[in-house]
Image 1 (cartoon, rainbow, N blue to C red):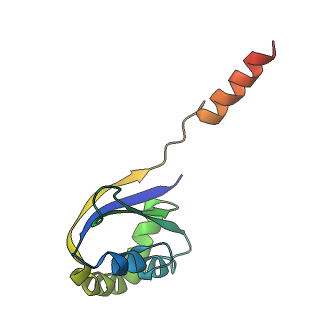
Image 2 (cartoon, helix red, strand yellow):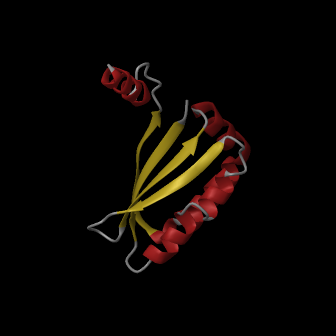
Length: 119
């Protein structure tokens, strides 16, 4: 099972390049999160129609891994968050989501179609 946290950001005018640098997969946030072994990575998306609108998706092994990170590194998280305030006009947590393990998912369906096409 994996766990993701999704955030939406409106970036201050003229600060998009800086934001991408700090919030991207190799940026300060990903570097901080990677202190926890169960951190799987960060994806950064920029709106195709609004250059100041971004989405981040942070992936973790589990909600417990995220909680463990906060217990251990919460102070550093708060410091970095305050440092980034000047880059952001607004931010909101879209939500936290668990990956579903559904029996008979897409791989199973593809296998059934292949078997069905043989005969």
